[in-house]
Image 1 (cartoon, rainbow, N blue to C red):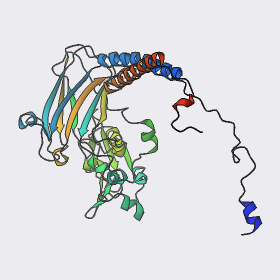
Image 2 (cartoon, one colour):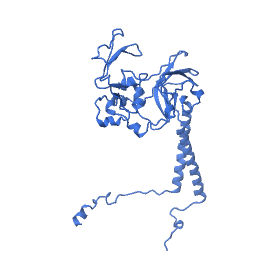
Image 3 (cartoon, helix red, strand yellow):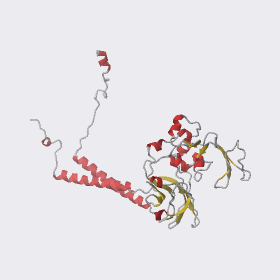
Length: 370
């Protein structure tokens, strides 16, 4: 090899390339280490105690209403044997103390692996943004749920077509006050604005009155009959290729309205997959104070089958504080780590005090130069 080639590979004459950078290597003096251990203990233990006190002040009411491990007696009210049974049942909670808003409603699933590689990748982001004509690669990404025979599924994929479709309604018939579960504002604002949109060509119109609302013009509207919302208003709408496509509102009519479609916030919350097999997702929130001993009765329309994957489902009512929801693990972790480091610091300190060792004492070297 020529000298030119050798010179071309010579590192540049800089401090970092020639390893002339100044360096500082701290010496772990025993007393400094002991002091650090004791300091960590003094900081972590009080922090853990404060977190534990704040966590104990929070309220978390949980009811598991269907599951593989539940006895037949426990499942008799809300248990279902298959999907979409539309079984009606009630879940009751009693407030153990005054519940300050916001009060959050979650549902919890166990043994459901949303983090599975195939499950996570089974979606089409461009379709969720309204695109209708998918490429071959995009259709492949949606496998194994891209079509049902000759019917195109929109949105396609495993995530979109395993949506949690139990419906919870707060019953106020037996209470003195009206408590409303708000189901808006539960999804990330960035998801709503940038990740989801109705299909290209979709349109809807609120009619002046239900009597004057008609879907007869098949060229302009694809609905068979007007949609009646919770406020009593009638809407007509148009979805492109509705005769050959099954849209989200047709797959989950009990959860998603045709006016919302993929912009339904329960759907958007579900599409943000969980990292662990046991997870909670926000269903709604109450912005009214609930007095002590108030009985909250939730009417449940049970449709979501958990027996097929040997899981369970629960309804949770909880309050939050400055450090989030009820969490006993974090304060106990702080207390445990702080206690261990404090004990080690004291033991090391006693050893160093009664049996000191001179720093860099060569007599402790196993091999010595003659």
